[in-house]
Amino acid sequence: MNEATIHIEPDGKIYGVYSDDLAQAFQGCPMEIKRASEVEFSMEHQQWEVHFLDDPAGHIAFAADTRSACIAWEVEQLNERLAKL
Image 1 (cartoon, rainbow, N blue to C red):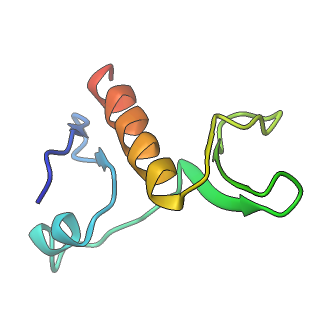
Image 2: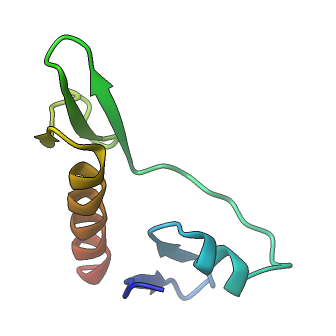
């Protein structure tokens, strides 16, 4: 498993970037999963784009020619946000 940042609230809620490894670690515990971002291909721009769902304007946060580059950037950004909580 790659290094991941998680944040645990006093009430026991855990925030982190989803991975199958993380889900397996908490197997049997009730989970509620909410997306923080989306990586989608833009037909208009002919590139992969990252959008953070907490941005009401829907700005492109990052774009690249490959989905894997966008996902790597997305995970890095989300881990940085979690580290600041």
